[in-house]
Length: 143
Image 1 (spheres, one colour):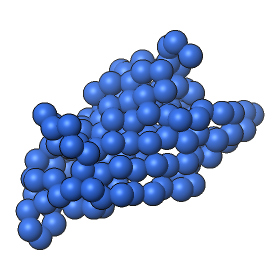
Image 2 (tube, one colour):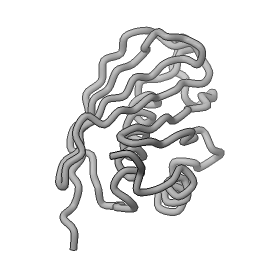
Image 3 (spheres, helix red, strand yellow):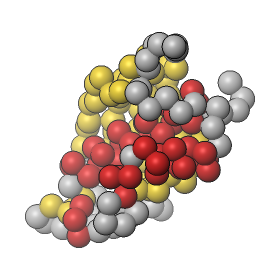
């Protein structure tokens, strides 16, 4: 696959329209890039994303990974809002400081009914992965 089914702008428009709750109270999650079997998303971590000790919380990183995987899948298959998460697994490797996080997503399998991907989450400017996630999504059959 050399192109995507939706451009970055089309994917953002779909997410904004069908999932406005992700940007309630601001725009903390920003899709920065989509490509063949890939996506990059940024979380502008604010006070609401921190846990005691001043680090970005696990739930904030989980949402970032899930949302990045979903964006990568949609960009590659088109606007299929009923593609759903069936499994997510997380390994928290390092404690990120407060602030932004980047999620780099790579789809490992993109079939007609199933998609599997992985996400590496890092602090901007660092090569150290703070969280590694894998996820599986069910893609509804064409109607």
